[in-house]
Length: 196
Image 1 (tube, rainbow, N blue to C red):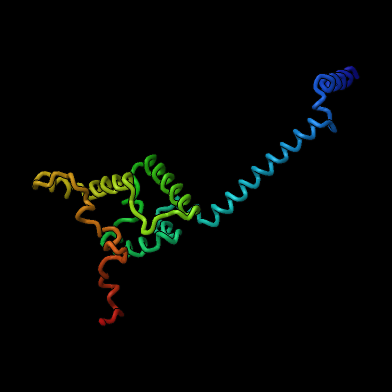
Image 2 (image 1 turned 90 degrees about the vertical axis):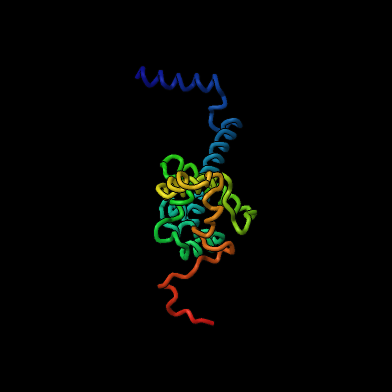
């Protein structure tokens, strides 16, 4: 009995010290409305974010499938050109456009994804798209990484100083010609193509 009386007395004394805790008072209503508004705002943000992530096939960007890069319509011509390029059988998008180490890969992926989605959402993306300086550095590093024996041989046996990036001479390797229409047809693609 004494315990219940003590708890009731403590509650009553807390209300006396802070009248804003008392239900029905102005500060209590304001605090309650703010909590409800905050919960609704968080819920709406999570709902809109979840819907956008699902609509944009967000999980596909964690894969290595090159088709994920073509989720965005401005990448369709690059994807189509890659399918006709000399590297399509040996390299995917991430092999050339992302670092091979785990942490730098996901940092670059996050930066590119944020920049691309922001530009696409705001409608201020450039077409045709181009590789930024940081991306060119990644491309160069990956060319040298995959073709290490060849690049070492070139460096040792020629006056080539390495000042020019690989793409200076080999710009059509990944995505075909400069018009972004793809490279020459493969033998298996020539079947059914009529000469005009």
